[in-house]
Image (cartoon, rainbow, N blue to C red; front, side, top):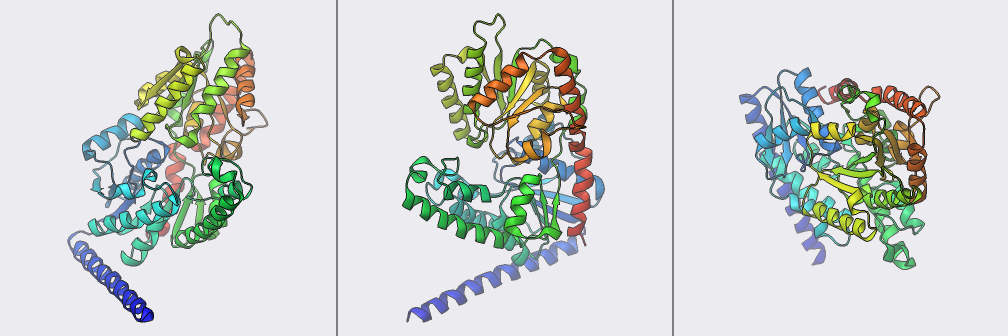
Length: 463
């Protein structure tokens, strides 16, 4: 009886999938007869968020528009914002001007991928939610080429097998990484491993098994991609270990507006007392570490006549991000440094430029940051960078160039505070050497370099 029910259920699912595939194939055939453009679909449910991932998305769109005159780009988005406003924000926030119009395909089921709805089994439930979201996207528009630029690997089989689309992926950060597995295995408290779990042997074992199973599934869906682009050496290492497709995996550094930031005179930073941080207000960016390290740094200065100011610049995606800012404000009050910490949210590109001109040091405290566009931009702008000693900053960005220092790396409150103190007390001549070398080193991350490498990889999807 049970076997019969299972068989009927299996046949029903097969029938539904076959019907969907047939429907999509017919739509694609009719559309192709009417329109002979190359239709490229970008899956980016938070395309209006204003972070580094969004800069990659819109830079990729512009690159395709430049290279392929008959290409039409569509964006699958869940942002309830008019298309005209989204495009306007692209220009204001990123200084990116598109060459032609794009279509925004609005998705109503984006809430299914939001973590707040899943207090347990968050990664699994978000991934299953992305399957529904991906199916909605495919049913609304069938592209010739599908590219996920936000990390929803579970949508790959949907577009590949149901939509018959070649699938490309630009991976900023793996959904699960070997580092996350190690944190659980070693019972270390982290963003992905809460204290009550790390302190419990049984819960840690259960979570490790769950993570191992999820990692194997993640590898299975990830391998369905025909083209894999990763944003850094750190991401590449993890994706190769999980997806195991080295011949189709390419490192494509994110686009940074290096020429624009290079226009800032290095001497403008001399004598400035502001320390700037540029990062979205998300938990993994660890703004709390910045504030606590800044507090300790202030203590080392005693009664300085011209004390520094910490300016936290970032974008907010939703109400949860705004709530995080309020928590950070409360922390500043508790430490009695509210008058020395400023919060600046959703600034325009030109406003960010002005903040950089008024500053001398830049902070970035996220552990295992996959790349760090903001880090590159700050170094290009002439700020002395202090970044976390891990991930992309350690492996790709804040590295010696021509045998000389380009910035500083730290990993906790004390080392960040010490680095700020070292820079604060450094002479103008030594600071100028670091700034000059840092600016020269980041020329390899320009928007032009991104376009060249991205388009070279993208051609694999057009064959």
